[in-house]
Image (cartoon, rainbow, N blue to C red; front, side):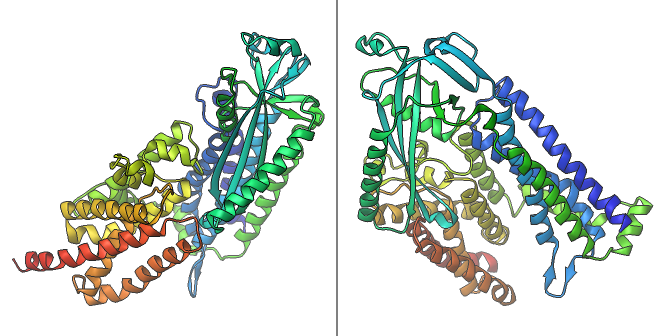
Amino acid sequence: MKEKITLLFKPFLIALIGLIIGYSFLHWVIFIELEIFPLKKIITNFGIPIVLTGLTAWFFLLPRFKLLNLEAKKGNWRDFYSVILWMILTVPLIITQEYLVSATGKLTELNSVNEINTSELTKYYTIRDYFIDKNTIGVHSSFDVSGKHNNNFNMHIYIALPIFENALDTNDTDIKPSAWLGIEYKETINNRLEENEKEEKYQQFADESQTDFDNTNVSKFIYLDRLGHSDERDGFIEAIEKNPIYEPNEIILKSVNETFEARNGSKLSWIIGSSLVGSIVWLIMLFIPKIDDQQLKRIKAGKPDKEAQEELQDFIDFLIPKEGYFISPILIYLNIAVFIIMMAAGLGFISFKGQDLLVWGANYRPSTMDGEWWRLLSSTFIHGGLMHLLFNMYGLLFVGIFLEPVLGKTKFVVSYLVAGILASVASLWWYEATISVGASGAIFGMYGVFLAFMLTKIFHPDFSKSFLLSTTVFVGFNLLMGFTGGIDNAAHIGGLISGFIIGLVLTPILNKEGKE
């Protein structure tokens, strides 16, 4: 056990403490104190920690797993250990960022709300003289989907109220509000409901929100919280722009009705608790498997891990375009690049709003059929969020490895683009007003080509038997999930059918080329 503590548990503790201290310091300096990059909260507090812990686990801790005998009769426990390790590192790091934002926020006392524009901006405020105009407001409704397979339909109503020094200021339209008070109402319903049912649920939600707003004393609060870059803040800005009188002001405040000392809640306890519990769980998990004596001898002798080096080289090979596998990585890079650009533009990380997707080139019947036909192609390089991107790129990686060497660069890229466009056409034909994005239609098209080649014996019979079942399960599972709602199954089916036809058309060409 001594070897496990020294070679596995100590590096884990170093990684955990190093991530919490290191990233928290950078987060505070770059995004809070200096505000060098105006990234949204979902990225700084959630996205970056997930990526950092993933990279740390992959490159620093996973190679040490070779010391443990994780082989099982029906597989390998390495992937399970990897996921648990990632979670143990990620949870306290995310909670720490939430704590960092609230704990380091300064409370500024203002005599008048007008001073907010002349003093240094801080996180929290108390104001002596102010008047919140409840009669001249801006309202914005927003909708998005979330949850596994997009099962949740989220409804938001953002209300922005102008804040003045006193009630007399509302009589002079030349006097602009110094800031805005934001009030959000939200409710989640089942995304599988029919459109008329969703409209009925929304109307009920809107009526309840209106009643609550009418009965709420908006001027009653202990202190105000200035919102940073976030989807919530964007919603309030949209509401401000719909205000009939006043020009937008991007200082958005939310009322808080608890003591300032209670702003951190129990976050610190959760940081300590999650770190401690995670460390204990990891220590117990290290107790279970036996040590691989050969690996232990290799480590003590200071010899390099040739197998790990080979695995790293194989991973690098997947990232570098080369003969027989040239187009697939480029397509993956293009999709990732578009996602990174959208993320850097502050549109989100886990998910993007429908309106933003539409602006960036999503497929949408009213817009596409109004002459913006380029959306049929541009939509295939846009994704609705991180998980959407990851799942699609994994599917493209898998099919590209086996299909591109058979098709060649030109046939592969043409087949991919044609299948993607036809998938978008199928979505356009099936849905009257649905925003559709993603490479899944094109990828399903390549799986259609893949199935056609297996059935027409382009691939060796032994290969076809090995991968026919896994391909059928992959396609069938994704189509089945699409029928549960929230997923563009029309694009999936359209891409699959068009790809299968493309495969049948290409079969005699490939057979002829093989005989020459």
